[in-house]
Amino acid sequence: MDHGSHRPMANPPNQPLAGQPPSGLTDHDYARFAWARFRSLLAWMTLAAATIAAAAIVLLAYLQGPLHLVTMFAILGGVGGSVMLAGALMGLTFLSSGSGHDEDVERID
Image 1 (cartoon, rainbow, N blue to C red):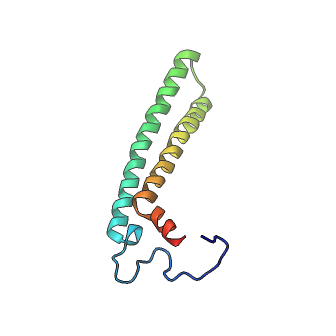
Image 2: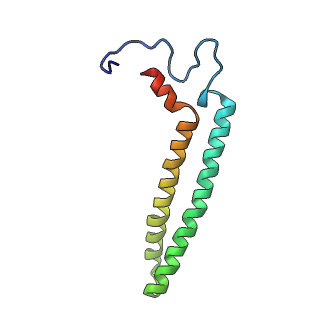
């Protein structure tokens, strides 16, 4: 496998081979399903992030006493943002793997 060669590809990426049905996100029905599943995962992660951030605010208020509004926003951004980022990256990994993009990369090499 020569990674330095620049040979033209016989079939452009994201295009099905002649005579084969579209696969992955090039199939519009499957793409709609995959993106709906991704949005569903993000919705659940948003709920989880809000719950975890609220629990962190309540716990810190219990341990430290009344919190300033800026402190609550910082906790919400830090804890909630971290959970949301993790959920988005996990969801994109599932989307890439489940839609066949990982196999397309191996096929191009």
